[in-house]
Amino acid sequence: MGEARIIPFDGATSGARPPAPRSGRRPTRTARAVRVPEPVEGEVPVRSIEARPGRKRAESAQPAEPGPAETGSADPDASEVGPRRAPGSGRSLFGSLAGAIGGVVGGAAAGLLDGVAGPGWEDRAADGLAFLRRRITGEYEVDEFGFDPELNDKLMAALRVVYEQYFRIEVSGLEHIPAEGGALIVANHSGTLPVDALMTQVAVHDHHPARRNLRLLAADLVFQLPLVGSVARKSGHTLACHADAERLLGKGELVGVWPEGYKGLGKPFAERYKLQRFGRGGFVSAALRTGVPIVPCSIVGAEEIYPMVGNARTLARLLNLPYFPITPTFPLLGPLGLVPLPTRWRIEFGAPIHTDAYPEEAADDPMVVFNLTDEVRETIQHTIYRLLMQRRSVFF
Image (tube, rainbow, N blue to C red; front, side):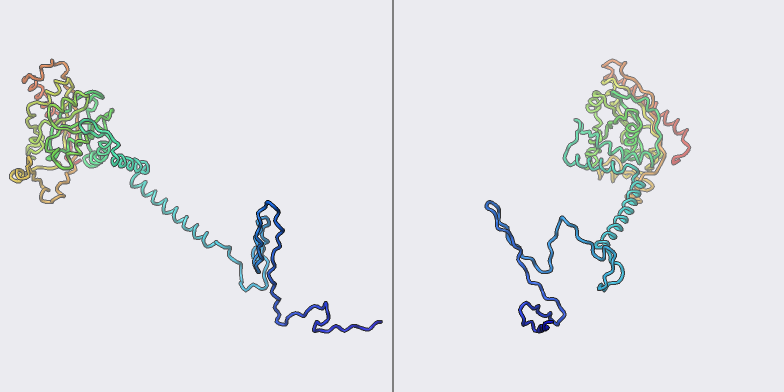
């Protein structure tokens, strides 16, 4: 055997591996440059990128290997105890709770709106917004008298609540109103304020098979009021004069007139349901000239909404009013006294009185005009008496 070769520990011998440091830490690797091949002519050169220690480039082609937390294997060096929570699980839980709460609140709000506003409130809200847009932009039509059919439908919807729920009006005789063509409706006037005219307009608009618009002949005072005059024009009302009445009837419109005027509207409560004088019969002349039928209309229930027990004439002259009513609630209760009493109404339309058989010159004959005026007045008065006999109570 040969002699054994002794290898020193100081690593002096060439080729010997240097001893590891005693600190127990592994030596840090030095950064190596990634060698990039030489660019070929015509290609864009690529800059060399140095590999940084502790950073790995993501490879989109190969998925990352699952770690211990994902595979379920325990890490002996891990200091945490128990399963790890997946990243973002807190945010997803909060989002689920917020969505559930929002769904419950949204469903409750929709159910509440359906209960209050009724089914289909979304469509009505959309129609209302479209209506406001047309009002602002001016995209609506009016006739030569200023009548706005679209706005009138909205006003009828507001008055319909009073008509059906507050006064609980019963209407009959609508078959006597023609479905087309001109006609003149003549009614008794009462109630201190012209509420009876508005309720008659709602009755024809809502309950007539043709849903016709009733064009009212109003006093000058209505159009002198700041806001009321503009709304009255857009609702189809016009001045109570021969010219406007004949023009409307000649165009085939349905016209309403209350010939008692202020005498019937502002009469004392003691004279209730006693018709006053029907003026000079101007409405009969307009009907004779246009050849339209006259439809008598009797209204019961309006006399008691504002029982007029007095008239402050001095105050009425100062305010340039035809009368200043004093009722059991006004002016004692102030604005609250303007709320009408909830009486129960009856409106009946009688058989038409035809005028097309009269000659053209009959409109200028005082006797013919007087006889027709008296016939209309007596028809309305007798119908009122009959309705009063059938009424069981003022309020029920």
